[in-house]
Length: 484
Image (tube, rainbow, N blue to C red; front, side, top):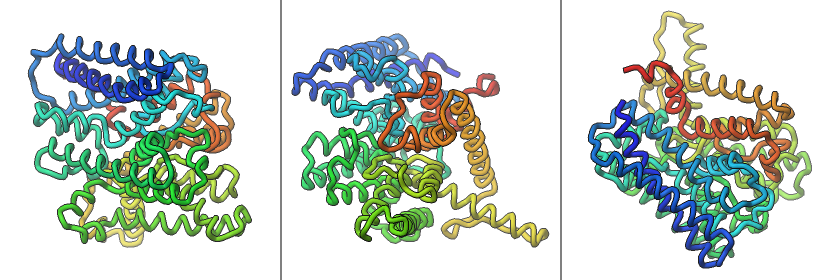
């Protein structure tokens, strides 16, 4: 493994991450906020460290192979969270008493988890709030995907980075060249950002809040500029716009490219897309009916309004809230926890296991039942008319088993730290699924501040595992990875 080449690329990545701090700095300068010096200092340190590292290894040449790609991607996310925590740390906010709290908030931002240690969000200066939301937007489409888009010199090695950051069951490119794929993804992402920002402004939000909530929506992140999230606006128009764009963010972005090329029929034929939309429609209806029967709401309109928002928010792993679903009937609370594991579509900004994996797992289970009945027959798994290779099905089974084993182990550790069972379990589910809010002590109106530092470190690791879908991170823990 070429560590000198890795250091060169990580240095350049750190440099560019620091440059993005200029945007919250501009907000802070405009407001003459108390966060001007902390953000500027963070930017100088990050850019400086990146520049020094890059220049130290600038003459290094070589090709990025699979091992280098995995190492670079994993440590890029860790570095992003580490330097992204500096503005919080240097601002000296009481709610960030330790660097671990800052790192937790930063990792939550970049991985689009939305779990927070903050109680009084509205008391923060706008520069810090903007940086907090910007980390969502950068992490949503993938910080390495952006890196590939703007640095074509990576060449063939960019494909290894792309495969490591987008490790889902269908990580195919949209264009023959990976740099073109990355640029296409970011152009689509940027266009959606512009449209949602404009729509939210027309619905009554100011430009700053529209932009911050757009970042949180399209990245399926969930950081809000308000203490009570989207509920603070009490606006059907704003909620409807955010629902629409949360659904859009949970769709495989390659389908948008196909639509641009005129292949709209392919979208309507896509099995994962149909199941995803079907889940949204069915679960919204089911939740609304249950809420009406439980008399949580008096009218059909109210029940649909709040059930629709919460179902879409959790399924897409966004984490915004307009109601305290922790007060809903037990059936619905359990249902929302189940949705945390499903997530959005492969190739979307959503977290979770992804809808396509659930489809394959269900079909694989049905196939095994048929094999039990007809042991001499040969059965295949088909999704969208195409046969799923046995190797793909086996990889998905392995992912599911590993995901659940880590979930159980992490939940036991969190319970061992003193958390009640529901809080312990949902804290892990919400961070591994990159969702944010859970139940009980980490419900939609509460936060993660009370969790011990060791618990925050574990949950930060869970966020990284969820964002990079386990294998990219866990392979670094294998002794075989380090062998020549």
